[in-house]
Length: 466
Image 1 (cartoon, one colour):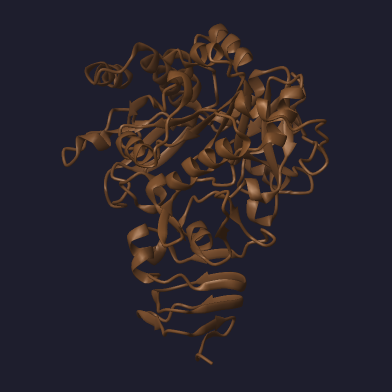
Image 2 (cartoon, rainbow, N blue to C red; image 1 turned 90 degrees about the horizontal axis):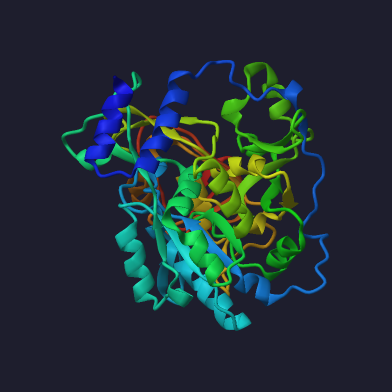
């Protein structure tokens, strides 16, 4: 009965039948989930070396290829991993010319600047949720941004009920809106299918899609990559990056021995006995950046074949019903990953990109680096660092995980120019003009601590200002 209860709730909430069908498949997969549903090492082959953006030769990086590309940004998230109840894309990132800019500000200005510089016009479309739609459109209007040819600026994510571990729909009288969640970014293809957008894009001369996350400011317009993808026989291309010891958790691209197709293997799909292979970065050298290129005509054909619902592997995301309250009701969100589409095309390709195209902010650890003096925003609105060998940051989750706690303790971001790594344990607050150097380590002494203005902090802790 639990599925029927969820279906009835979705119908009462006005959800489309296509959404209900997609949720039904995920729910049934959840109910039949077994511990042996792994992608086993014996059944796959490592990806091997792929072309690198440094080595590819494009006869002519043609702006017309970029002009034929629609940029789609995943923008439905509320930054729940940082305790946010507001759009993640509205988080302040950097100050430029006295103006504090958010992810959203920077993304829109990247597109505006590319349009002006190249003398072309191409659309930017946000995949929004009910929580992010209004703030996004308001910011776009404030910046004077619009799309050509009547192409909409947003698509709306499908939604599903959050469920309890037994499969029944969650109830939360304090805020009933929190009983619902997006269906994961793999749902974008169902949205594209049911919205009719692909037909409109083809009518307007758009041949390619570039899909990426709003929190990755490295996923900016590139004439070189657009022209390279246009020249390929492949219908799909994923930007991948070299794994480092810090990237062992990232989804890896493998080749299925039986079908020969490329497959995205998330770490949740790795069996315990295969973990030693999956974490071997010399064996599985690349991870998925979630920067995806797709040819519109080929995607339309495949979506029509599957009636808009790719049979992607299920991701069971365990959360609390109120993301900002870890003590609230435990729930399950059933999701899929959009990178799984790589196995849906016989002709799929990968391109190795450098770290400037992969600058995600998933936690406050990442946000500390992004807000620091390691980066500056260029006049093309690109986040630029000297070498992109960024320090590894580990902040005590008890005191820094939520953005409100982070901002309270770090009202002034320390200098990371000379820092190799940062590990903060315990409750530390920071004054102005603090500088980190070397392998920074601050230990928990069981009480709140303050780092005075102008201090230097290294592997021995806090040193006096010089």
